[in-house]
Amino acid sequence: MTDGTAASQSGVSENGGAATMPSAGPRLSEFHRTMPVFYNWEIHYSCNYRCSYCPFTVSGWHTFSSKNAYPPLSRLESAWRRLYERYGKGHIAISGGEPCTYPEFVPLVQTLTRMHSVELNTNLSFDEEKFAAAVDLKRIRLAASFHPQFAAFEDFFKRTVYFKERGVDIFVNYVSFPEQLEEMWRYKKEFQAAGVPFYIMPFNGKYEERVYPQGATEREKACYDAAMNGVDPETWINRQRREWPGHPGQYFPNGVTPSEAARLERQGEKRVVPPVVAPELAAAAKRAPVLCLMGYRYCKIRPNGETYRCCAWLAGNTDLPKPIYLGNLYEDEKFSLLEEPAMCDYTPCPCERCMVVGEEDRWRHRWVTTE
Ligand code: SF4
Ligand code: SF4
Image (cartoon, rainbow, N blue to C red):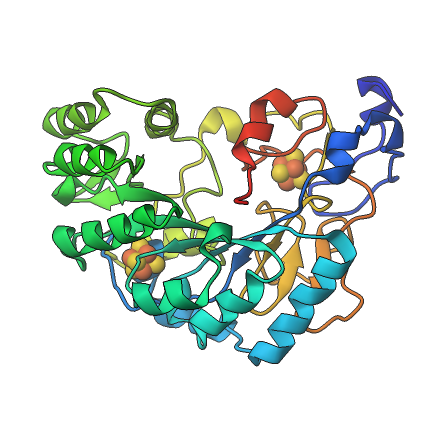
């Protein structure tokens, strides 16, 4: 099936019911078939910090702990080796919670980098020298999150520069929380002077009865704009996100549905991630199916090993058939990704980097590995 009309006749229903699987072959190029697989691994819902703006803190970390699983390192190594043998070297983006508080964190990353490249979304609160001595740094990317509520700037900056000087691909993420806006421009300037990109993550949530980002005061917007001066293209992307409040899925910690968020709000939580779904998106007619590589060159892994095609489907529903639920990476020795990309009409797609065939100019530069 090579045209949109034919493709639109075979899709995947919203509840995951797979319709006729299309023949993706004619639309795939060498690029699609050989690009590395990107694994998005939420390793556990646990952290040594308690940032007040963190969705997990807001909802209560205890509500997530039952979703964690800690298989022995040998089992994890086997699982990742099977993927390596089947699909070659891939790129594992590890987030949480906080990856560095996972048991045997350094040996685990050391093991993984013997097969794959690894990206850590981390608060950098680990022993950098021990890490650097054990791990192949050429295969590491660090998305280092600076949280002034728990980390001193000087210490965090020093750690960042330590990795930068050793050639690590490192950048800093910073949440534009109202209480930490005033210094944002200065932090950005210092990191950029050290050659470290500084990305602003728009704060989404409730603070002092205002819902952000749309409720920001003029003073707060001025702070934001001060940090945006001298922008680089990536920062510009973040500014666009600030002005784009209707992107569902982005505002919920995994496992917390809009109705749960609404319940927490009724219970009087001080800051609750708002159930932001722009009315025009919620009311939108189902979009035409697209051929998407997610599930074929990407998958989303939960802390208990359950693995899904992409972020659109919240954890906990293993009754969904392929192409939505792919299996349990930790437990299933026959676990596999999709043999071919599959059609999808999920509306709206929650991923700004979704790998839709025919739209490569939009997403291919956003999916890059180290080494
Ligand atoms: S460091 Fe990250 S995961 Fe931990 S509490 Fe802060 S925002 Fe949440
Ligand atoms: S990323 Fe978007 S288009 Fe791709 S499978 Fe997920 S919901 Fe569908």
